[in-house]
Length: 204
Length: 103
Image (cartoon, rainbow over all chains, first blue to last red; front, side):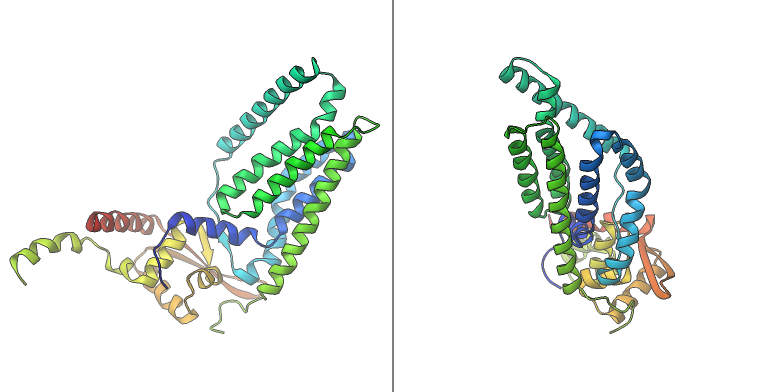
């Protein structure tokens, strides 16, 4: 035991420990994949309800079987959900306004075609917000790679001229979802290899 | 002990010796930044052995600084620990006192 006790770094280590299993990436990837296949027929609303009701339970169910037997359990401090919700909403509105103004300036107007065309960039910027938050909590530089990937592919899919308006956003969600599932699976495999299940609370 | 040394002692007396022990300080610090954690997590994070952690846990529990909850998860014993309000206050006071002492 050596070195100074840095509480902020300890908190980050706790967040990092609980995120290094790749479970979150896999679940987010699955949601994006399903959203990519459903958003055009309006079934995404059902997905959103399902997510609110079961996402946390699903996450906990997997962590109890994969994560906690290997590295132990830590209950992270609860966020003020009202404040978090307000922050997300403000960020979303700010991005919408800036993008709307940008589109009007560049194209001279705002049509439904342009809205669909720039949806991947809007979504990429939403991911930027989410991953910036996670980067702050964990201090993990991996989230910077997630940010770069989400935003750059979003912009690329917005700039590419797809034959049908909504194809770009669908493909973007599918690609992003598949990527996160893959990254999550690799992280989980490495995690399980590095941290074998430990006999609970024995001196071994 | 000289008169000067005696005058310097009062601030030192404020230091909570139970927390001042390095291993217990580490346990308290790890529990301070989360809402709760189990035995395995603390063993991993602090690098303490089972026996060491167990004995320090008992001392902190006896002082009312931590709450210990024993349960079974998948038929295996699982011990979860969290700081009590008293423990949280004691840790914050300890931090303040150390700052004051070393400033």
